[in-house]
Every structure is written in C-alpha cells, then in structure tokens.
Length: 66
Image 1: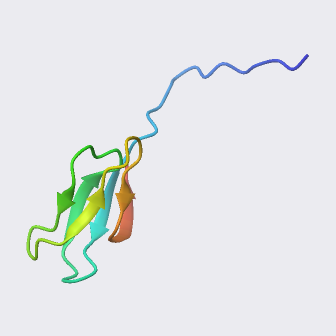
Image 2 (image 1 turned 60 degrees about the vertical axis):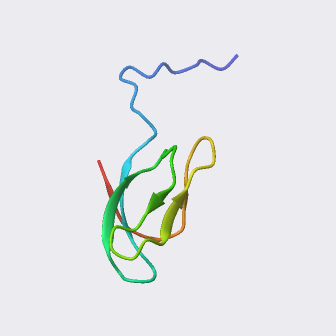
C-alpha cells in the first residue's frame, strides 16, 4: 500500500494574474477563477470568459501574482 501524504498547510489553487489586452496593450489584474466576464477598461474588449471553474483568458498573461 502506498502511504498518502497529508498536506499540512493547504494553499488555494486560484491566483491573481496580470493580463495584457491584445488590442490596446492595457494591463489589468484579474482573478484566475473569475465568475463574470472581464472587459478591458480602455477599449472594452473581453479579456476573460468564465468557464465554471478556471476562467479562459483571452489576453496575454504577463505575470502571475501571489
């Protein structure tokens, strides 16, 4: 039998992500598990499409924050 290792300190799988809009190169910070569509603040293009669990990111991921 294999021994199961218990995770002592659980960490969330969701993260904040800095995303760049493909149309206007504006950068925004979004949540990886977004439940609402996120639009670019400057041009209005849709950056994130919610998919139930993890959101589908339409823009370019610049950096993953914490």
